[in-house]
Image (cartoon, rainbow, N blue to C red; front, side, top):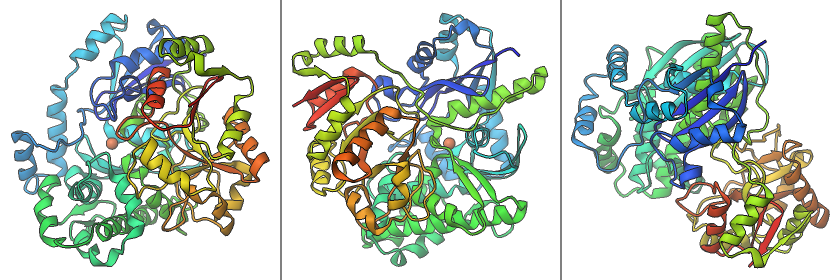
Length: 564
Ligand SMILES: [Fe+2]
């Protein structure tokens, strides 16, 4: 059977590219990891070239190109241009499904393609057939086609908005995803509740929602939850859809918030936002299960970055099993678009398609010893670096002595979480590391929790109702024993957002096992390797620059160890 090679591209918010051979992701990387601009929005011209280098595939071998979204999606700007303000102002009056679909079809005709077309020409891919994969279908495809079971599946997507929709309900069966309901962008609970509260609290919409989630456990929801309830609800007449009842859209909601939340505490606002979001999503999931009778869920879309809401869904008695795609935001869509295009192409060409369950997601670039040595020399670090065969053993020992060490090893992770290869590691027993990482290394917000990486076989010691959680996409309650990894728990509610580490990453496993050998503790604190406001480090040069600009105690890069 011949191989089919698909290039997947997301050219809007958090852009990136993926190269897929049949159902297998060969390489995927977001543009931010190359240009060092967090959540970079725009054609991923570098990432497209990079995925071919990583996968060692010639662009001439590409069969089809899959582009996410009929229209491009960009993060909302703080200062809205006039036409955006006008559109937001008109939205309460015109936002029907029919209007949205017409708008998307019209805007699709004017979709900007010039930079991508030029690049395709330069790379000898001009003339390849292009599949435009609708935004929520691309999200749905990420989760459904890589689900860990074979059964018929309820596929849910929920995000701020994309292609004028904010949620979809689908039934996945075989190699088809059939949509049965959707909510328009106007009715978006993620935009109109979560992102607007994020903006109201002085944080960045479409980026800092996780900070509201981190703040929420410190507050009490009851003082502000009524205000949230009056913004968006489940549509009483169409129970699989959300309904905006505020009478305003997106940034136009700010005057309502200023009036209703006047003199309310920031932490209580965050708590109400999170608690209401969990309630709303749980009710929606319940309705979807009741309507379809399907109790196995596959979920994607930026709203499923909310690990606390994911916990609520996982714990619902109606849910038999749930799979959250670990790159659920727009940054993960190149994979979904490529997979959907692959199955549509197979369908049309009479090719029997294949499917794989998701395993590890180390899809990014790897740098060999020679390159790392060259980077060390170029940046003046070679004299301070030692080449060590068992570097994991040394790092385990250093971390057990309280040192905070960054690890740059192997291929980088797909999605927003560092899963050991681009991570800063610390001793989870010691709360003092939190202060040091927050104020001297990453300059993080003081209330944000850290997360642990735990050996899979030790996870049940620390997590209640444990199930393998290799991607840091779900939260868990923790056991009393988890106090020994206290710095990796949320300080207020003691929940954890763990990575359970299995054989997918042997080096990282060795490191944690080494730490366990010394301390008896089966996990380390793992936070992404970057400075505040920057993406996770993508290249040895950026790693060395980050070492320079922070109080990290050391960097383990490949087999090279640098101690400050
Ligand atoms: Fe999206």
